[in-house]
Length: 508
Image (cartoon, rainbow, N blue to C red; front, side):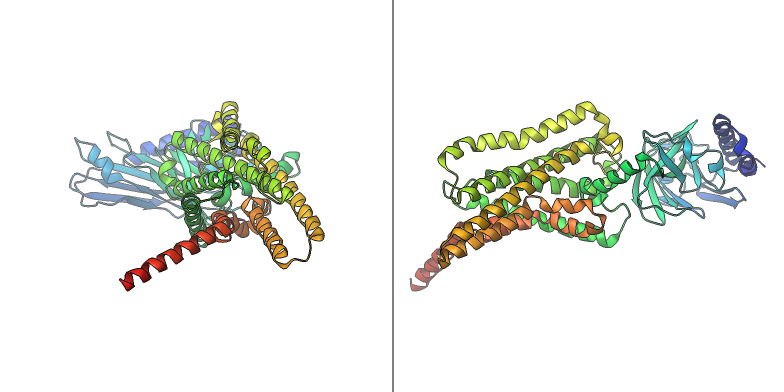
């Protein structure tokens, strides 16, 4: 029987060339589809046929013009399932108002359609993580899908957390990913979404051992924890981490907004330069908000590759500009601490607001423009972020590492300068108190300036990394607003004025 021939052919596949294996696999797929189509019979409502053989499981479902079902159809086999809008497809067939779908799960097809037929830019080990499945519409005139089809594929081999999963489909002689994406994954199963029907599988890529590329790949994966931010840092779906991520980012957004509101409403002395702080808030607020919305609606965005690539480019720009503003604020803090006073008028002439804005956004814009020009396909990963292949991730990772290193140097210099100043101060309590307060603010500000992003290089500290970096808005509000004497004085004055008005009203 043709349905079982894939198992028989695979027994001697070790001596067959790749081209012959692909040809045999295509023959089995076509023959089975033709055979299964004979089982489809007209129906007014709905009907189904299912059977299991040694090499394949088959589920067939047919709907007619009088069908009463109104939900997405799910077909199940032992190691996989498919969700397809068969009712919508039937309604699009105006003449017959009917449709039929066949869902087949092949247990041994990977011996013919090998995972090594998945061609990638990097030399990796490729492992078939699911059974090979086929979904096809039979005796249906209009086969256009009304909605993407979702597959739930059970992992048939041990899942490697360091591996990279790809939802692929068979295209004559190779596995490719066009039109398919990973929606959700954990150690047990992966959910894929595709905009077309074909023969599908789940393939995992892992670095090859005992090669120089393995070292580079491992370093790249470690650095990716920093670069891919919060969602990509957790490749497995974990509801607790998802909730923690969502709550932390939302709290951070609230405090970013409060900080911006404070900067806008308070009256600041002429010597205070808040340009870097305001633009840092704006950049990170927009970056975190776009990041949050992208992850929440990822399944919808992934269907439009151009939109996904544009979002990843905008995220690249916003986060880079945020880091540039962190560096500018660190320089301003360095100058302030060095002089132990307001920035001198001569310095202020160099560090005007317009000049700072040009630096803050132009540097990030140039990096993104050059990156897009060199490798335009580097944007739009599975999570709508920068792709890590061909070292493209370093278009983000490189500038971040440089800024973190420079900020660390400035931090050390600031600490040394303050320590030296403390030794030369008189034991005046008020003066000492102000100086100690300045040290505290310096240490707190340096958390705001991105120092905690260094934690992203250590996988063990991923939760701490997530919490601290999502709360940069909280730290900014505390340091620049709550602990700022000008803000507290104006807040106190407003409270007293309100109290006086209230008392006058009562007397009247």
